[in-house]
Length: 136
Image (cartoon, rainbow, N blue to C red; front, side):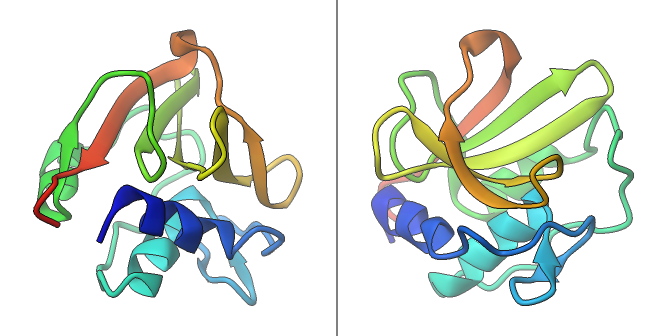
């Protein structure tokens, strides 16, 4: 699987409703649910953590989860399929997948209550960036 394939998989969920802890595109996805749904759509079946609060501040074992899925830390510029960890506030974490369109990302947006394509934010809110390893 390539990053572009993962980006396309995420883009198919645009318009799905938002729901905290949501894992089903029909009833709602949150940002981690979007990651899980996109991975599943690509044949990378995984179960990502649940039970977190909207304002968690951190995620224990994040690097291990990323490595287990075949991702390695990388630097900007972001490429299609890269997974972004955004930190819109000191106590909030948010994941998104870089779109196939340059400068855009796919995210489950709590404020808009659905999965949308949005502009990639500036580097000040980017807390992490991971890319699929070439052999995935």
